Image (cartoon, rainbow, N blue to C red; front, top):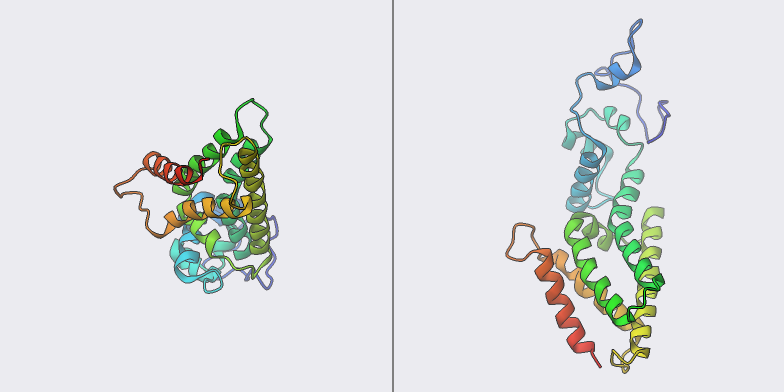
Length: 224
């Protein structure tokens, strides 16, 4: 959020439902009066839902305001712009996975690369299950804005880091060597990402059973 309150192209002037501050009335009272009480996470979650339903380009701040029960001008007291919401959503989808992959590729705990690679695959399933709407949005971006371009670069970096781990496991003799590490990396992430098409939180399978099944299927085919 920003501290700016002036109207502009992305921030409309206050409407009639936003009374001016009276003598001795704190500005925070004006901001809170008559508005639903949503925290930042709820606002972001509703935005992600709309972006997935209507597309990012097809969703306006007015749409989000109606979804939350705000006036169009009141929404800007919660978020500075639609662009900001997209950035926050894509960061939610990528931050935890980035930490997991970085730890697996940089860690020097004596464990074989094979074990660390399998752990990344299993933990990435848990990340997707925990952040499925945000990951769904991530997988639909096409690079039409700076947050999308940044997210695509981060995805390429993750593919490259995982490929490095695949190569190390091949060098250990734990994985077959007739496949490209870069291809294996993309196929592993692709298998995990396919869950967005059918996984439901109230469905038959939980995160533990899914991660075990995907790791078993993937690594039995890759084992040397």
